[in-house]
Image (tube, rainbow, N blue to C red; front, side):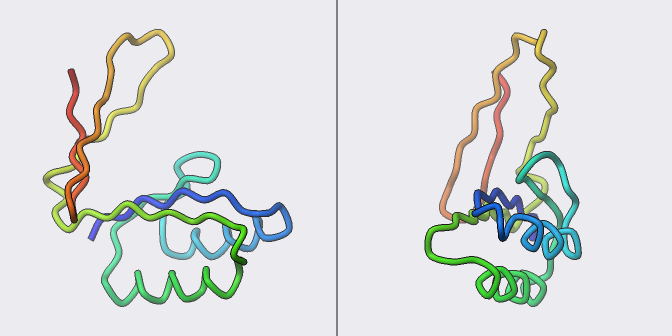
Length: 97
């Protein structure tokens, strides 16, 4: 499964969360990681993050079970292109218009 993780945690937990995520995924930009995980790895990752965060922290996962339905594009500030995201129950689909 393809997973994108976005987090906003207290600064005391930030380095710890980043180190955990780096063991499973690729660091894309500040507070954003992405990668392909097995269901077991995904479960392990969530358990590790639960023990390192508290109820005031936010860790979000966007999961797609079919990588072929994901379109990813890096935007340049000069670009006028827009990316729309259609989120279904278990898939994230990016559509460029």
